[in-house]
Structure formats: C-alpha cells, structure tokens
Length: 176
Image 1 (cartoon, one colour):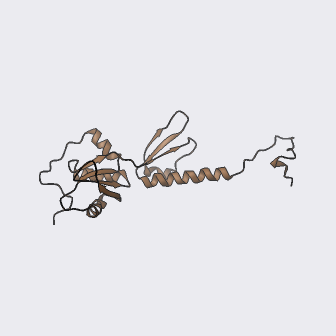
Image 2 (cartoon, one colour):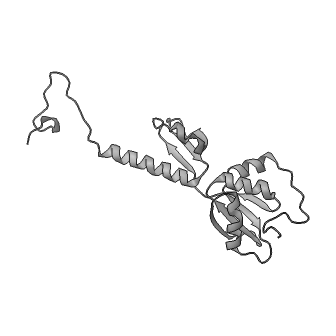
C-alpha cells in the first residue's frame, strides 16, 4: 500500500531555516499538496495522525493545495516535520490562542504544560498568555470571565471606621 501522504519520489528535504522552524512551531495551519484524486475527507483522516484536525479546506490562494487547521500548533509542527516543507508548508494562523490577563491573576502550575509563551502586554502590569491549543485558550478565557462575573456579583463591603456609626440611609445601617 502506498501511503496517502507519503514523500513524493523526487523528495529532497528542504533545509530548515530558523524562521521556518519558528513559523512551524507557532501556527496551527499548514498548506499541503493534494495528491491527484484525494478528497478533503481523506486528507482530514490522513492528518489526524499528527493531532486533532479542526478543519480541512481547499487553499484558495494555492491551487492544488489544502489548508489543514489543527487545534494545537504542535500538531501542525509534527506534520511539517514529518512531511517536509516541500509537501507541507506552515502558513500564518488567524486562530486566537492568546489571553490577556491582569497582573494579579496567576496561572495554576498544573496548567503550565498548556502554555506556549508568556509576555508583558504593557507597562500596566497585564500580561499575555499564549496557549498551544486554541481550545485551552478558550477554556481559560471563559474561566476568567466567570471569575470576573462572580466578583461583580459580590457586594462591596465597606466597613465604618471604629467608633463611627453608619448613616440611617446607608446599606450598613441594616434598617428596613
């Protein structure tokens, strides 16, 4: 049996530049040469060996190629490394894998394996966490949103200084 996406007969590995390696490591989309007669469903199945595939579509800007989008950038890098960049090219991604966090929000150490990079967003103390997998970024963003909503629902408790009684119309007065 001939592999569906094996090396073409004239394949000679392209020399990887640092830019190519960086691009392959941080994108979840690759363009692949479609062998004649191979449909998108077969392409989807063939690329599952590198990781969970989000979608496969014809690459409009590259005739004869398909755009394979993975959930995780490491899957795309495995595909490029396995097939070579003559056959499988990393391309820029439009998937959001980053979450901007206030400085007081800390990551759980058990989640550190999900994180590709962390950098300062600006001088206000916020930072950006970039995840390998877009689903992890979405989950973390939703978890952060729930925390913010819960914090907004909590009443602000203002204590009176010692010896000072709350005013009758104050919520602290406890009146009816």
